[in-house]
Amino acid sequence: MNTIAERYVKLVLAVGQHDPDYVDAFYGPGEWKTEATRQKVGLPQLRADAQALIAAIPELSDAERRDELVVLRRDYLRRQLQALQARVRMLEGAALTFDEESKALYDAAAPVHPESYFQSALNELDRRLPGGGSLIERYEAFHQRFVIPADKLTGVFDRAIAECRRRTLQHVPLPGGESFTDEYVTNKPWSGYNWYQGGYRSLIQVNTDLPIYIDRAIDLACHEGYPGHHVYNALLEQHLVKERGWIEFTVYPLFSPQSLIAEGTANYGIEVAFPGNDRIAFERDALYPAAGLDPSQAAAYAEVAALVDRLAYAGNEAARRYLNKEIDRAAASAWLTHYAMMSPARAEQRTRFFDTYRSYVINYNLGKDLAKKFVESRSGSSVGARWKEFARLLASPRLPSGLH
Image (cartoon, rainbow, N blue to C red; front, side, top):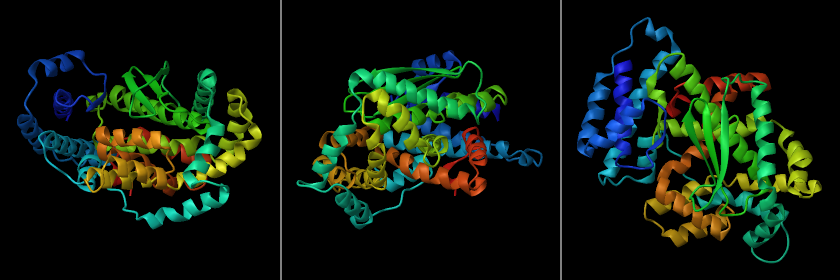
């Protein structure tokens, strides 16, 4: 299996020569990347190599079946290779529908929701934000009161990261020397990104193209850092790469089932780190003062944010229709403005995300729902048990189809 795993890593690196977004992280032997760059194998050969590698995966022995992680490893490698084949077909020009693509790449398909599905949340928002003008105008006017001033952004984000890390360390032993650095960037199609470096280190970038609201501090700190992407990658490196010698986890192909687990746990991790009323209390008592905002408005903002969060799947519908060529960019932006409560500028940024990452959008909301259901079906209401099951999920090669 270790030989197959090595061939898998080299195959992922080879696909990365054709798709600059494909390899999200790699911290294996540097000469493997050099070799991939030098050879630049053609797409048809890569597709054939993936098929040969799938066929070479051996059956499990009786002894291996007694180790759950070993069983998961076999399924993981096979499904990751199938997703690689699908990505290569797309690079060769294959046209897949939104749902065909998400099943092929991410081992899951998001439910389809009509406009009526989102209407109850919109109606409640309409009642919650009375006044003149359209609902999006009233929401934007309300929302603007909670922008973190640019000169306070670093302080607020650092305070959020410190609290997320403190809460995570209470429940999850992290490898010694783990750390991250953060950067503020512009002209990106995403709001935040974790670039895992290996050696338990991450580079976290925050996009400042658009205003950053007070709730995004915890969202980004948890999602990109603790207990999200940084912790996920560090635990995989510690438990699977260092302890078991599974070299396949030194590479992370972005367009693969691994991303649904990564994004889903990163989003669900916010609830794990801040259960119940913990989040609103911390934002009110620590982040609002650090941002120079009125703490007495924290509850009102959280109430509106919870209603907007019920519109999360509206982004999927916009992406599905846009990528299936049922609507154009303007119509997709209008959909996001109306049904997802995005400002026109944020909606346009989101359509650029669709252009680059396509059906990847399902990994955030569907991934969160699947991770939440999986963890809580095993942990019940106990906070400690929830953390335990969450950490087990982070450190395992489980597939999206295994979360049901």
